[in-house]
Length: 130
Image (cartoon, rainbow, N blue to C red; front, side):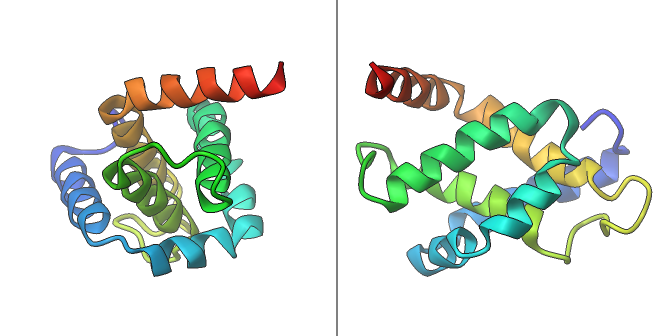
C-alpha cells in the first residue's frame, strides 16, 4: 500500500472491511467460477503472486470440502480479495497506471491479518503431498 496516498489507503481499507463482512457463499461460488479471470489478473500482483496462489489453492480446497476447519471470516476475506481482483470496479480503476496497486493492497491486508491461518493451511497442504 506504499504506492497509495493516505486517502486511497483509507478507501481501500474501508472497501476491504465492508466487502469481507458482507461476502456470502453465493459470492464465493461466483469467484470460483471465474478462475480464469482471477489467475490472469493475478499476474499483475507483483510480490503478492505467491500469496495469491496459496490463497486460491485454499479457496479451492475449501470449496471442494477438503479443508473446512477454518473460520468463515478468513474465507470471506480471501474471497472478497479475489472478487475485488476480478471486478472491474476498483478504488483505482485497473486501466490506470496504478490500477493494480489497490488490488495488491487488498491482498496485503489479507496476508497481514491472517498470516497464521495461511501458515496453517500451507502446513496442511504440505502434509497432503506426503
